Length: 454
Image (cartoon, rainbow, N blue to C red; front, side, top):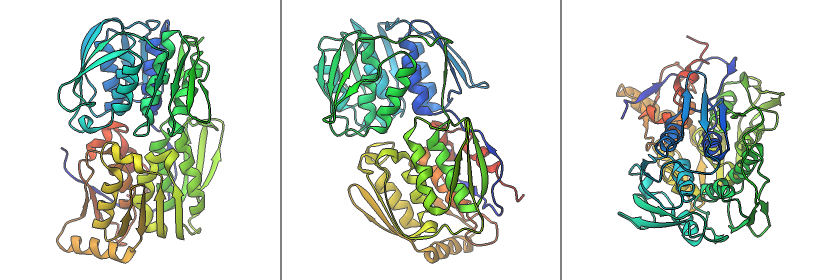
């Protein structure tokens, strides 16, 4: 674990151009689809992070030919038209939820396969039951659990598709449904999946990416029934797929602009991105953020003369929940009272994000009321200042625990850029900053690049 990193406050408004890494969610979905195509696919703008490298390594162990150029953000993969070259492999999915769910469903396409899967200690506690039950009902796999039932580590004996119907519980993670929607078109049969009560934002991302590869969007009813059409993945005409920048990562720089004012141009974001996290920027309009989508970039601005403060804020983050930590971390500076709803499912992610966020804010002197599905934050800026002064008197800073969760590190880093004590000196530190390698390895370097007061 890396040493804590002190965050120096910013003292000037922002200006400049932001180049974001590619989306993890899109990169890993596109890797699975490319493997199912009938030729070589080139992913441009792909993310290189721990999670995507885990996916690449898993596919290589399954016999796929992959060329990866991190400097150019390019990945080339030779698809096998729905076939998996190796019938046996041992795969470690780390703590990558997308790799865990997508690879498990992908393996079930193989007839007479035998695979061993494991992950980090945190992954061994993350939910897999909904996917395992669905694959069992489809007759696609038999599971042998080596420790806790329905969790990693386990062995899979795979059989290919045996049934055309499954009931799916994806409340714990929409990735469970996305895993099936990604892989089942390779079965070349019409299949029905019933999955009520799923959050649709990332499912829609899955469906839109599939459409680039010749797959009709799965017909969805209001009751949550999905009909997967009888068509197969096709290599794009130019063999190229462009990966959108990560809008979850963009949330930190939207928040940074709100705190400090000024302007940023964020490159390579289309006017209408497919990622639901774009909604976070719209939420910040209530804090004087101005957004101007261009053809291939977003310009964001806040006048330094505008007020960002609200008495009461109440938002539902259910459809873009990866960004709730960004907002919660800076809520003490934004509102007198903040309610964040729709986040129950985030208790089952890298850590219990609801409880952990409450813990860290309380350490900063804030009053936090936690429910199963929400956080209410009663801001107390004076208490935050006193906590920071007390730490300074001991020649220390306030330290944020990150729980090996990249989003805690990045969210609270934005809070730390605020010049709380008015002297430009660090008052907040982030433990284990290298956990950002999961999705944004260069986050702190990128953040520092917008400092104009050195």
